[in-house]
Image (tube, rainbow, N blue to C red; front, side, top):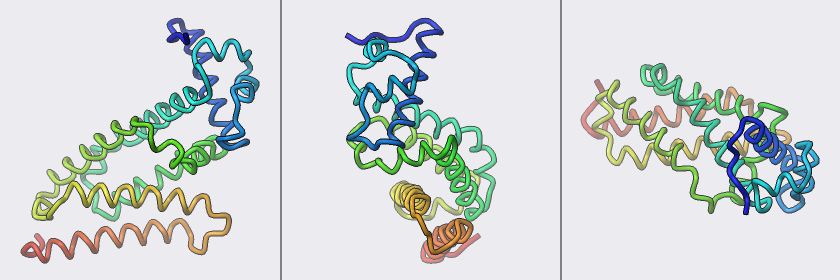
Length: 206
């Protein structure tokens, strides 16, 4: 039975295996990635890999957890600044930061996210959902006129996820027809226009 790493060396081995999983996925895709590919890239034996992971699916699970931690670690320190921004500035800051994270390390995280449908059944994204809802609620506290918006949590969820997958689709396009700056401005305008329109219907803007 695979064991949990306890010592620093074991943690380093597991970390190397997880990073190797991202590299192998980028090179070989999901179906063609094997535990041997991952072990070779990590510089460990297959036996050492099996000490911590029963199969490649468990490596994928660990990769997913790693990706969630990276996103949370990126967004959480930004919250005090984000909540004071204009809505367009907030959208732009999040999207540029997300792009930079996905393109880090030769785009291995972007390649991973392009397989999001494969990993969708794994119920490990809740920390990101909680963090983004926390950001949304704190943003409303700093912009109290937004309380008048109907069904705010649902609209926030739709806009956040729509923006995220739009960025992933854009970055995986070989020849995008617009610049990333134009994409960000367009998404920011879309969110701002929606908010302004909803506020007007709810009784005017402050």
